[in-house]
Length: 565
Figure 1 (cartoon, rainbow, N blue to C red):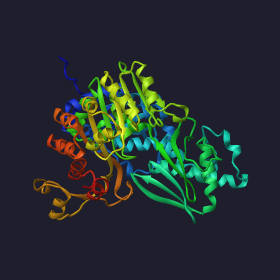
Figure 2 (cartoon, one colour; figure 1 turned 90 degrees about the vertical axis):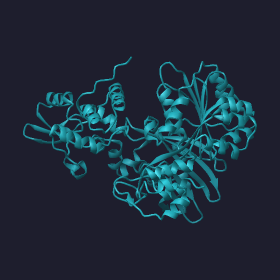
Figure 3 (cartoon, rainbow, N blue to C red; figure 1 turned 60 degrees about the horizontal axis):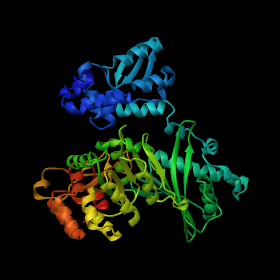
Figure 4 (cartoon, helix red, strand yellow; figure 1 turned 120 degrees about the vertical axis):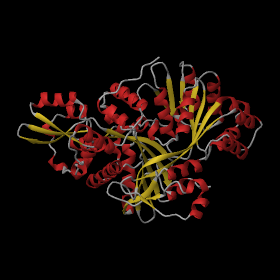
């Protein structure tokens, strides 16, 4: 029997103060050690404890002063005081130097190894000042030439110097050299601005009398700029050159990819699609975020019982896990989070996507290219000859792909994939409509996850709003629930975007039970399947969304935007 890990220092204090339970902190200590990170940084990053609470606890226990970095003038910070390597290794921030005394901001004052190494390398006496871990991480990124810092510091001249990976076709542009520079600067500044704002998509849209640029931030589109219609062809030509597309082809949709080099070590990927419209080519860019898969399952917004169902399905040696929802609902992130959990040395994992959005070490990722005869079905056939354990198919679009995926799930492989449907019940009927036999569905599908993304209320400014009881009942809350919670609404402050900051997943997680298998075998419709799912106790999207309102995570209007009965 395993002996529980003995906790020391601030980790033990966190457990004793009741900020987190022993098992979670013990696991975090082990995981942080493997990742080479301080344990407090790990706990805050994975949202197991609140940074402010940890700082106040440490100040109380160790008798050390604390500082709110929001009220500290960042212009006073000097990166020459401490090397970036040591600052990032131990997550410490050099605040100021007075004679032979160096003041450093840190989240764990019990980390003597950090303090000793700083003393040794600087030759100065070190005074620790407590700061919040999340604010500390942001300040470190700003101080030591972070991506955002690089972007902020870019002027119009340096924007021209930004590189993309494939710029061979630059000479083909039919644009005067005099006119080209402003277009290059404009396009680059748009890309950088979208990255800074944390947007997911950029829309370049031509109309009869104007040219509009919109960004999708936290799932909502908003206009950024309007340009004269005369720049339309130049902008689309520039974007097509960057994405290695055919600039002479304006009548067919095209797909491409941009790798924007911010610095020698930093680059950002964009997926690009062009669509011929009435007034020219509309171009949409999707920013691909490789870090999103590493968020961890706890930060995605699954309810405890939903998370347990997902982890249980991932632990199975074979069967099918399907994730469904509209475009941009976070399906890929959910799948990759699951893949990250099963990504161990003992497993051979292969993925086929159109295109690969998230790069993960230890996974064999394949870009699907139908033009070259490499579609999902082809990729799947190849995978089955590669001794696989886990297979991920980007999307099931046709009967051929569905049949091979189901055969793989029935022959001892774990298969994960996505579909574009509205709910878990509709996923099963959609596969039936494709032509998949009912008995194959009933025996191969283990779990279905339907999901949406709702904007998360900003914790700094959200405020309680009064909603009449009748209105709450009408929205779907029960009599028992109404007096047990407060409804919060957006306000807006410097830290957020109109009262919202980030997004949270809303999920319907359904395990295929024997009863559901019977209905599928009997060719039941989506209404019958849905009714059985509710009887079995699986929450639908609406119920899960209302839970998020009860928890104060999102607002009622946001829930109504993404889920409505």
